[in-house]
Length: 150
Image (tube, rainbow, N blue to C red; front, side):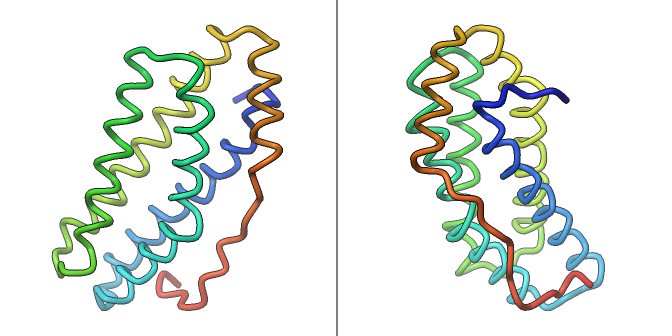
């Protein structure tokens, strides 16, 4: 999907988010110890997802408040709620739910929200967003050492 160059950094992050969901599902399918999968989710949250959410909330949310933004806000909160429950839970459905919600959330952003922003926002606003993202966004690697999904 062709993406406006100014929001490509967020799209690149989405690749790692989809990979995170896949890794979680692989771990569940292989019946890997729940604590190992939880540790990975908490790592991914703290090293990638929290920053990504913050960038979307602090930059993109400022330019267009509509039903798309409200949905993204709700989903961010749902994901944050799941992450906050993880340390004290051994519930595989919570972990599976996290993977499902994260994937569904990313696919909505890529297929609907980003094209919506590209259509509704003027080129000058998209350029401003690009500059703001460029100032704070860093590309990170998912270098988690316990490759339980293999």
